[in-house]
Amino acid sequence: MQRGARDVSYSGQVSELQKFLSDYYDIDPEEIVTGFFGRITQGYVQQFQREQGLPTFGIAGSMTRAAIAKICTNTAFTPQTSNPSSTTNTSPQTGTTNVANSSTAGQSVAITSVMFPNVYGTYTNLPGGTYITLLRLNNQGNYEEVGQSYIAPNGGSGAVTVKASDAASSGLYIFRARKTDDIYWRVDSALFYINKPVVVQPSCTIGSNKLNPSTNEPFVITWNTTNVTSPVLYEQRAGGGHVAVEANGSRTFTEYSAGTATFQIGGGGIGSSYNPICSVSVNVKQVASAGTIDQNSLKPLPYNPVITGTANVSAVGISLSDSGGKLYGSGSISVSNGMWSHRIGGEWPNSNYTVSLYSYPENVLLATISYVPPSATINQSSLQALPNNPTISGTATGVTSVGISLSQNGGKVYGSGSIPVSNGTWSHRIGGEWPSGSYTVQVYSPENILLTSATYN
Image 1 (cartoon, helix red, strand yellow):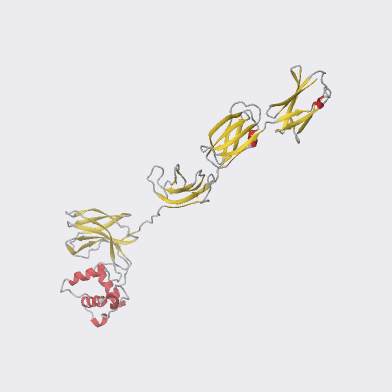
Image 2: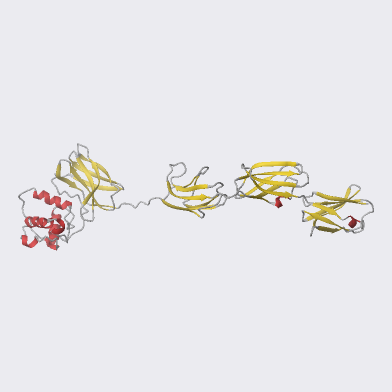
């Protein structure tokens, strides 16, 4: 009960308290017994608490009631001098041990240090069978138990540790020694302020920029963590794994099969027990398999080309065939970031090819492209001016430039490269004057592949 309380709310307990104070301090009942807990009643309660070694809050809590109950067990007590006006200190006591009980001199308990949730202390000269409780002073001025420790049957002096329960919070605490066989016996320590540390629980957020990506479509997983030790990113899916990550970051993923992929952040590092804190699920949609072959990558054929292209599957296979049938095949070519490449070894005849791309291992045809090797012609009439400064000309397909050479009697007498091809034709003026006789003229691709030759007599 505290100031402002009335009998109607406390079943007549205000008047009972006032009657005790009237008897204890020899006060005229008409001056104090009103059924209303006002300023005068509060002053006498504070005076009583001070005399009993209790915190002088002016609130009739459990400690005050216990002191009153103990006094009332004696039918004869000496009325005290009343002086409520002197009761003005309402601060909690934080000094030496208070013994407001029937204990003998020299018995004490004390709180010495705290490493939450453990509260450490000492006890002196306590009887056997004593237990020490940790009590917290609540907002109503009452003590509530938040931990307990039993002293050995022989009692005596020593150190004690009481673990506070989860219900404990920052505030004023005491150790209280009690006996199981004597409800009126107790020893209280001085008030001790305990600051319960704020424990920040591990937390995180995780998300994806695409929650419904298609197979082979990259998406980004982003996460932010707070108080997570050694975070680990887990991928909960067949073939998935885990990797140590920074507290905050992102990572790009590509799934090659349809289904749900769940990404989770856990703590403790790789090898610790699996304990996810946050997660996000990505629903991967299946799309039709597709692929392409880069026409430009076929240019070096038939000499060791690196053929390249794109695909939305995890692996592909390729085959090369000409009019006579299949010449080359290879499977299990990895696709990385939607791209694939493969070098074809050996030397192939300079002829038309068909290149086919398949998904692997399903062997579903994704793309087919034809390769026509470059070709060229020499305009025979343009050779007529030889050996006097002719302009040799001709046609070319499949190349952007050509090179030519002139040879006589088995030896080269002239050569020029990088002659541009424009609208399928080329021309080149040979300077100087050449000896009369037979000449052989040859045309080459940029890769130095012989495209055609002609003889001038």
